[in-house]
Image 1 (cartoon, each protein chain N blue to C red):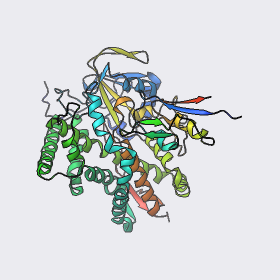
Image 2: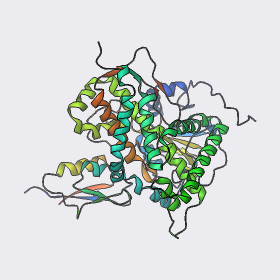
Image 3: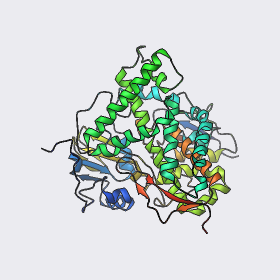
Image 4: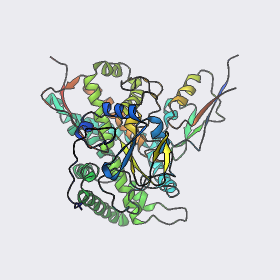
Length: 69
Length: 406
């Protein structure tokens, strides 16, 4: 069975560059200040794994973790 | 003692590593080989010019400084020949340090979220097309003077609720502050004074007739204690929004068009694959980042192993960081579909550009509308491309021939 991924945004590191929301809108949402949070509990639906890694590798603040469960 | 009202002449640079000068004509024309040379020498270099100034040359050193608000203050954010007294509320939050930075920044964030920018997008597309209508029949154009220049100025005027027709007035103030002001204090003070008077007039009008724009938004803002902002804070933030929102994005759009004029393959690809545009915009932001910021060292420390001493300024070059080959493979090439791109064009850390979502939207719209109507264009060999000097880098003359080459 394929691994399940979870994404997590570190709120202390996020500065609202919003790259994750642009690249993976299914996985991230922005608050009223434009800072990012994972959608729900961060579980990455099947088929969106690439987007999770892409968001992580484009975050200028290195604020995104992708956890393999 | 030299009189501060007389702009100082800078001797030409012969030793870049020990005597760099970001206002030197060679830097203005083509800074990339200079940055490479400085990076090869040390992660942090120093010049005695500007009353003493460091420059981090690697992405890592830039990142360290941008994240270190204990040793590096934002109270001065332009490297200049003079260091006059720091004004209170100069331009919050960009000139603020913790702890006052956060509330001032949070105040400005909600009007600039990506969703807020989407509402502005139709107006931006209309502005771009009005501008193109003005020159497309001529077969040639200075794209800096007649296109990229007016897109951001009209956008921010629209958001602030001030007349788009005053654009040339705003552009002149910015030229006086960001370019002439490096060497001429009186020009800078004059522009700041004129801007403040201009905004005071608009604030006064809104006291009797409130509007739905950023000026009213700031007038009605309340701090945690429920108190309105001091007038100097409102004026400082308004000056910041006007200054920061204009020649930065003007430069980014201009540099992008300059690249596309010289790179037909990238043009064709963006026309064939329009969904690539957001990724391309990020790469153009990386390769031609317009904005260099500054910090003042307030406490001695070391950066990437190099000692830095209090009292010096720091030229915080996000553009140079974005060309560091340790961080970006093929750093000196525009890879239009670059997948991994942690570029620092909008800064890093707490001072991330508040208008980054606006700038991205403007760039994307400006390039899309241009390519829809002008898929083929090239540099006019009869003209000269010129670049702005100092803090913000972008083309100020961009002569193009429009249409297919004969």
